[in-house]
Image (tube, rainbow, N blue to C red; front, side, top):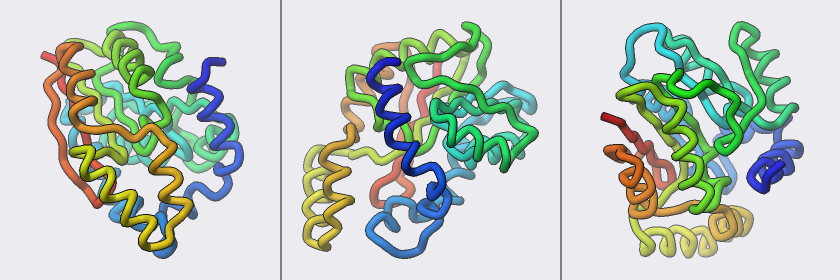
Amino acid sequence: MNLSDFRFNSLFDDWADKYDETVYMKDGQYEEVFKNYTEILNETVKHIAKYQGATVLDIGAGTGNLTTVAAKAGYNTIGIEPNSKMRDIATKKYPSISFLSGTFLSLSIDDNSVDAIINSYAFHHLTDSEKKDSIKILKSKLRNNGTIIITDTMYDSIETKEAIIKDAYNKNFVALAHDLETEFYTTHEILTEIFESEGFTVSYQQMNKFVWILTAKLG
């Protein structure tokens, strides 16, 4: 188990049973992070823009919420989730979808076999160095003209990051501020550099104060 695998498992062992409650809650200091959650998932799937039956991986699938939106849109969707408790919940919720063990850095999928890779609220568990390594791996799994879509908290500048963290402290959202300071949320500049170095074209769409959809296309 590498470091990122350990971080995924240690976090979600404690969170699995309350994950869905958290993302749909309407109050509390994380409300803004998950604001427009259903819309965000639907918009993420719209960015796939592939033919019906295209193969799509949802990495860090959690309880399967994004995975099932993609499946309902007509894609051959597979959920990739390292945490066994999360996989069990996802399988019970969506028994017609396959949920397999794996991570951004450990993916037992054939090369050149996937049309798109999606994820939501997960990529920030990787350091910037691990993000770079993961994109090399994910690129190898994609077919020609493949797409990677990352939906997560990210910042359009360092100044925005600092302002958002300051605002969290001013609102006494101590747990949120701690997460923003200690998790590996990164900037558009760094993400664009990572993807462009692997031949992707990158665009961004902001969905709430925290969350953006990054769409990276090959070809």
